[in-house]
Amino acid sequence: MRQGKGIENPESRFSAVLVGAAKMPGVRIDREAYLCSALARHCPEEDIRRAIEETPAAAGIPAAILDKLANDSIRYEAGKVSALSAAAGIPGVFALPATVPADMAQYFGHMLRIAQKLAYLYSWPDLFSGDGDDVDDATMGVLTLFFGVMFGAHSANAAVGKVAGMMSEQVAKKLPQKALTQGLVYPIVKKIAGYLGVEMTKQSFAKSVSKAIPVVGAVVSGGLTFASYLPMAKRLKKHLSSLPLTEPRERTGDVQGKVIRGSVVVQRPERSDRL
Image (cartoon, rainbow, N blue to C red):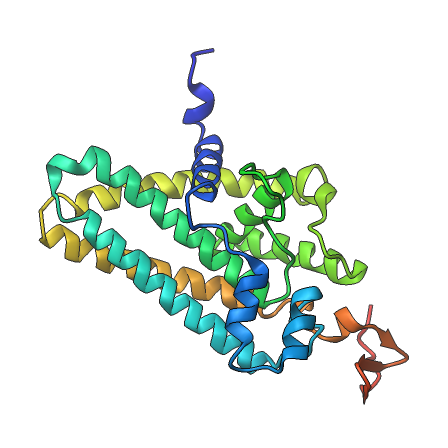
């Protein structure tokens, strides 16, 4: 076997880029700080505290508020990544060996940033709860699936739905380690990683072409980045907002059709379609 063959594998290449992006300064989002800042203008302190200690769904944060905050975060990250991509396109063809890898890294870094923000708004647990720089296998798995959703892989949608279902059933505050690292979801994670490795190679080539002409390349590169990043982020938002984790009853407890939120009891009609 030739040396370096593993890194040439699309799955390995994507995993290496994902880990590298996760270690970049400013990429990891502090869940508590983000939720506190995002919800501050829209929710009372008690709801914010509960959203942080449990989840926004358990705190009863209205879906309209979460969707607005998600859209605000998407626009912010899309604008930021596009500006950086445009700046990387200014030097032109002679700087391509340096600017294309750097641009790809910061692009994936901003994909990680929006994935975390959307996950926290829609009641996923802290994805980077450890103190070190290492990314554990379960986090790698769920981020790979999030990226798969962003790139339009239908199998990733189904896998993310399975993981969310497991967590809502168990009222879990951590990712299901076994399912993501050796269970039923793991083969899908590996398949999606390989698919993303191929897509990443295509994007790298497209960015190289867009940066070949100085100044003009900056405009094209920034435009292409915005045009690709925005719909991918919206795709992930749409999927995460539709999952069981966003339903208050999944977090606060369901007793004979009644959902308990603090001192308020809301009667829900019986459902005949429950499995």
